[in-house]
Amino acid sequence: MHDERTADVVRRLKSVEGHVRGVERMVGEGAYCIDVVNQILAIQRALKKVSGLILDQHLHHCVTSAIRGTDDAEKEQVLGELLQVFEATGKS
Image 1 (cartoon, helix red, strand yellow):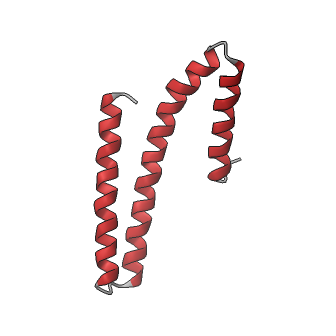
Image 2 (tube, one colour):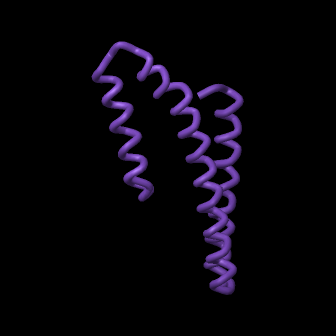
Image 3 (cartoon, one colour):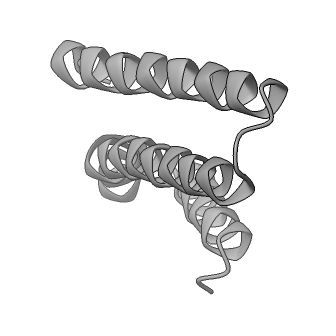
């Protein structure tokens, strides 16, 4: 990953980490359930954004490089990895 993108991803992950600690604190303090659920949904959205950034980087660099290359095994590997990601997200 490029340095700028890496820094953005790390910053976002640190934010998520802090958010998770905040939710943990909310649960420990007996916060209103819907408030906790809304915070968890915000964390999920933030993680989805991070995942999207990393996947975008992977598609533009690793996958593109493999597809343009001459190694058929590498091509099959990256395509298999993409299928696994789509299956895991329920988008296949």
